[in-house]
Length: 229
Image (cartoon, rainbow, N blue to C red):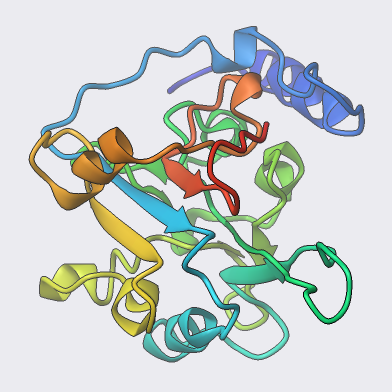
């Protein structure tokens, strides 16, 4: 996407200003006005919170396969507040990582084209050599899942193992390592894929979907019938 310096600063300013405000006004309508491409493949993931036990095998596998340095992380498993009373107290676990949005604010605000959405897969990625460290994408991301890589000094995040496992015909490292099969990955454009079939069978929600970002990370809530925003 090409734009003048004035147009870029105007659009970026709208995003950075609104990210500090709670509620549904975080992303302005013009920023998300770009049309969504129709791809032959559109990768997505489902995290079944009811199956997740919080073992963090996924985070360890991600770190190993993608050479993620200590001190930063491409994904986290966050434990909820306790539910119930002792000795019947239970916890839930949810995944925090890049949502690979159809309408990705990080892509729209990047001045150098370092933040991209791969037209062949729909995966949101970072071209490290183009990143100048301006931080616009970090500020624009409603999910706050981007970070500066301490070695490359470029923005970094989950890329569904696009350059590692996926490039070798494997599933993302987090999916391969999950002992309870809480993660399902595949082509959302293929109605016969496992991930598409799961979305037909399960009650799911998407984080902050009301912002219009159209995240491609779906979650099966802890309790049947529970819908989150």
